[in-house]
Length: 88
Image (cartoon, rainbow, N blue to C red; front, side, top):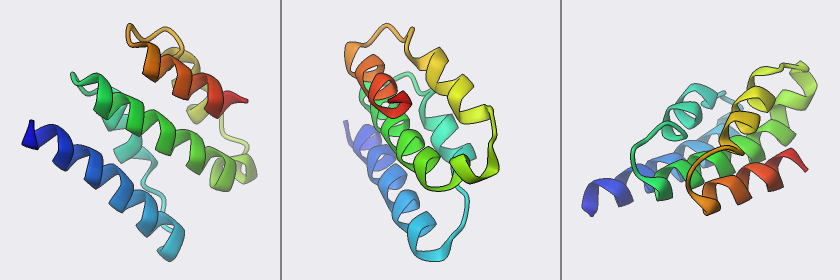
């Protein structure tokens, strides 16, 4: 599905931009974690977790942890795995 791959590439393009420009794209990653496609949710979860360690630890925000906790109950095992890895 071309749309799925476009979404996945967008997640990682935004992650690269967040690292290069210091911008916060957490809302986009959170949106990806709510996609109908499990592969998109998994990649959004992975990016969310990676950004959490980079930026959100400094902000001491509960938002990413809450989202990652929710994702541990996702029906897809890959999404749950990415959430568990992200939470440490």
